[in-house]
Image 1: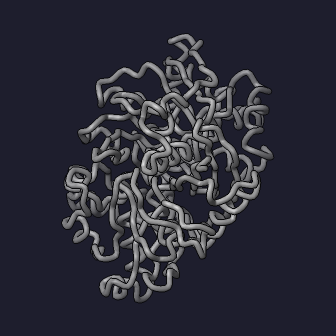
Image 2: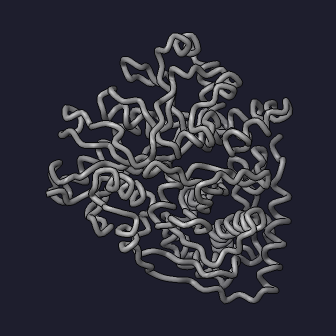
Image 3: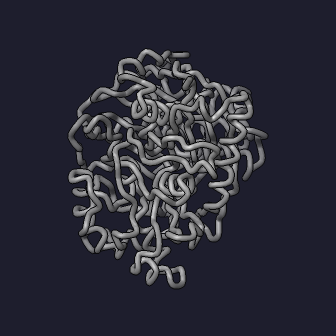
Length: 496
């Protein structure tokens, strides 16, 4: 009797395993945090072997926690931090360098040169992406150019390149499968989102040999089977989707014009745009949402680089809170931010600014400012950045947003969602299950194995836990947004 879908949620700061029942209820959840590596200012890395070991540890404990057996697992879905890349030896599986994380800005100057050389339109027309260190291509090129012998080995076809989903699939299958899905491939700046192939012009531009890249399949698909010597059983890996696209699917945003925001380490707003890629020069990204039933669904995306990571900074950097959850408690000790604004541009700014040289600022401090104002201003920065992206999206797509579906760790923060509704002027809806990233991967995996029969069956699982309605006066909202944007302008181009 197949009772569960297993979702592996490999994120920026932790590896998690969640077992979902068919109803979408969480039966077991285990999380393993791992270290962030900062070799230089603006550089961010992960140890690929630590990612693998923490993920396997989470899998084992998730089963043991409820006494589940491998026989009860109908399939495995993988969702992952996107754009982060690993390069490893095809035979031994040994990484040639640490994973370079999506937040890493080491290739900012390379990207600036590509832009000045006029490659922006070529890349946007083929990939739907802007030239930015965020995406995978320049990270792979950096490894090939800076790790001794890597380029020669790549040219001989001895290396594998991949995003984190590919790294997990390779290890889970005992090195038998090197694959990714459309959603992850579309984030590399190497994949043509119209032809659904690795693009020869872009591979040539970045000097990346095609032989080292993974095969690309739909998001709901049998990618391969786990090696029973490694995993305890031979189970189908039947769903793969980048974390933000998976959250869109998990929120059941299956129709054109529907959107969601995930408050994770970063903040990511995606709008379903249907079967055609809507490529715009407005600062939004065009991405593949998922591949399912022989069709590809596209999305518009706006990315906020620092969301929940700002709360981690309060905890680990400033040490003025003990946990991210404390931010709500302390923020309520003051009636507002006291005029303080925090722009958390720790690694540049994403949409709508796209400035890798921006840096964080705290502005509006007076003698009356205390730590509670700074905590509240940091929390509110998440809502302001989200509002900036939604405003851009509404203008670019010509669609008026009527409600915002939210998820991610910080969506448990009621004060944040109340302020988000106020600053947007539209209701904010939080589902009963906020683990929609993992849930989306589970749904895609379940559709491929027949655990779920249709999207309609999945939709019946979705329930709203709480809706937050706007209460702020329009005049107050406009004034706050105006001050926020003045603060952002002061953070731009700081570190060039």
